Structures are given as C-alpha cells and as structure tokens.
Image 1 (cartoon, helix red, strand yellow):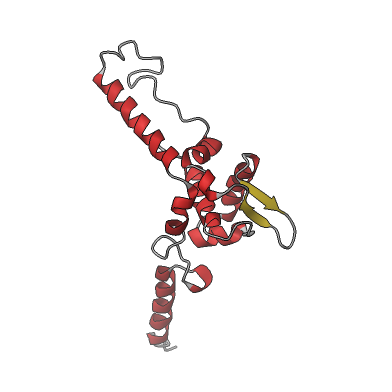
Image 2 (tube, rainbow, N blue to C red; image 1 turned 45 degrees about the horizontal axis):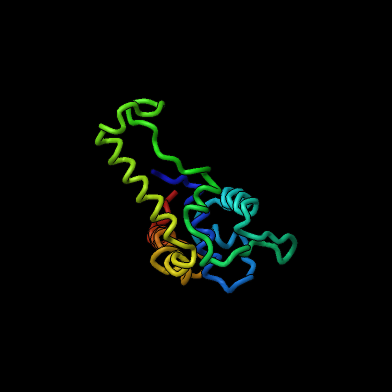
Length: 171
C-alpha cells in the first residue's frame, strides 16, 4: 500500500492547479519550481494526467496545463490508478499465488482490512481538499521570491561572508 513518486507528483501537481482559479493555465516549470522537482519528469506525469482526462494541455506562448475537471470531482484513488495502474490487494504474504488459508489467516485479514481502509481514504480525499495545503507556505515555497530554498540562500550568503573574510595570500 504505497504510491509511486510519479503518483505523488501527480497529486501535488493537481492540488497546485486546484488552488488556481478555474481554467487558469499554469506552466509545468512553475509547478516544478514550486515543489523543487524535475520539470521534465513532472511534464511526463502531466502527459499521463492529460491522457487520463484530468488536465487540459495548451501549446504555444500561453501554453501550460489547466484542470479538465472540477477539483471537487477528482479523488486521489483515481489519480493514483491513472498513474500507477489499478490498486489491488496482495494475494498472499507468503507467495505470489492466491492464499489457500485466507479464511484462517489473521495476517491476510489484517492486511486486507488495511488495504480496504487505504482505498477508502484515497476515495474520500479530493483534490479540492488538498489545494490549500499543497500551496501553503509550510508545504511549498509560495511566498519566497524566485522559488529558492531558504537553506540554499543561507549557504550562499555564508559562503560570500567567508570569502570576504579570507585574507589574500602573500606571494
């Protein structure tokens, strides 16, 4: 019961689009910069989302992506399955084949119950529910100018100070 990195990118990207006004076109590079992820990998994820009908893609100077559906109408299970394929329960913890003792096996019933709850949680959560949290300052870099990480900025300033303090070598 784990989602892939690509599915995580898809959920975050859709949440980012969901935080924008309906129909607003957003560049993949803007989303990638906001989340500090690879723009080329995110673009591939968005192509998958486009084929699955979650986003509309626009080419040209004003190109980018917009949600094809209302964020209230997209649940996380749909997104995960569009990217990762169907979510299916494990057959058996001991082998790849169907469990012959599932009616007696406490492990099988516990894992099956956890799987059922996992799927229910994904079905319950919608993109609209995530839109605010995905674009909050605690999660991303919305309020930071240029999208730079504070640590990187601090490191650069520290290096500049250290360099200024160094004395030139005598020859």
